[in-house]
Amino acid sequence: LPLNPAIDVLASRALSSPAKPLKEFELIARLTAGLPRSRRTILGPGDDCAILAPSAYPQLVTIDSMVEGVHFKLEWTTPEALGARALTVNLSDIAAMGGRPTAGVINLAIRAGLDQGFFERLYAGLRKAASAVRVDVIGGNITRATQLAITIALLGEARDGAMRRDQARVGDGIYVTGTVGDAALGLRLLQGSLKAAVAARRFLVGRYLNPTARLAAGQKLVRMTPRPAAIDLSDGLWQDLGHLLAASRAGAEIIAEALPLSDAYRQVMGDDVELACTGGDDYELLFCMAPRLDEAGLSRKLAVPVRRIGTIVKGRRAILLRHGRPAGDSAGRLAGWDQLRDAPP
Ligand SMILES: [Mg+2]
Image (cartoon, rainbow, N blue to C red; front, side, top):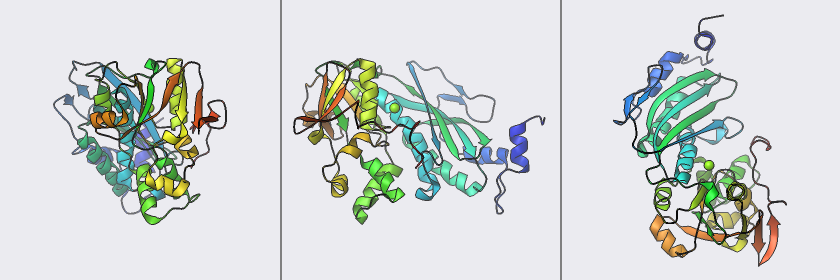
């Protein structure tokens, strides 16, 4: 066996780009140059481990992967947007706990057919997104694979405690930030299974390709008393609500008419809320708390539009009410997007 099979493979056959053959060490050095690092990072990339200064706060840890053919297709996106999105999906998990992201490590699975320019652009997008939220990129690994995949493990600080999924109580209002269903609709526009006017398409596709994590709203929510239960909307409202209900051992009534839909969503789907319930990738926050503030008050406090979409009830099921009548439940047709079950895009 070669001493280091990973490097051996990369150096010999690596990526078949005629213009710029890739060398792993060179790539790592080029990609990690200029990545943001604060004083909390004692030692950045380049050694066996990075070294972080101790933190005064409880640490949040999360990890997420984006795999070509499962989570994205290269013809839909720019490398920059892909890099930024890989970080955002992790930031959203930190946001859902009310934390502050601090540092991350990246694993890049690379395949043949992509040149150095591609990875430089991917890292440029990642670097910009990390700088914007002051995340230190403290290390990375590159491995050869048959599909491109970007995996990021992200650390955060829970300075004000953490919002968990198991804290919803009967009688709590159920709230969401922003609008739901846009990203799923954007994905279907990219896939060509639906059509939209130019402006609506631009908005919806943008919501899919360039999502934002609700970090500031999460950090404000976690300081409220009593502390809300929360989850981020990555797999679809219905499925993510289901996770929260299971953890809290509670049920929910959701009012179809109350779901926050964007103008672009309504232009394409009218008042059909199925995609808003089942579509993923919105990266909005869903939270539950005693309904003391109205929507306007909460929206002001969180500096983001907030809509109350229902109530936590006894039992274990979520029921979607349309005109006051059940339109679907958690045992029925509204099963969320399940990435283990669903076919690739
Ligand atoms: Mg999540």
